[in-house]
Amino acid sequence: MSPGRQRPLRPGGPCPPGREAALAALHALYDAADDDSAIGGPDLTRRIFPILAVITEAGFDRLTEAEAEELSRELVEQRHRKRDGPVASP
Image: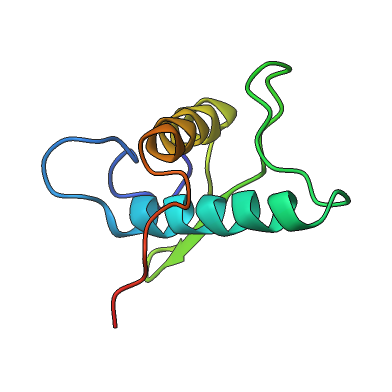
């Protein structure tokens, strides 16, 4: 865990604020990669994951590769269930 992080970005219980933001950013990257071949999204087969970070009142925190992989796998599972991803609420 990086300095300043209050708790791990893990599912279960109350959702840490940075986890949802990181997952939303991954969804945006996934959509952008679908529209433009120069943008790369997560590649589970080759284990290539985006560098993710969250900024909170506690400061900057770069997610570990394991956390980026976990969120990337969650993203892909969500996209299998709902191809176009989540819809932003007003």
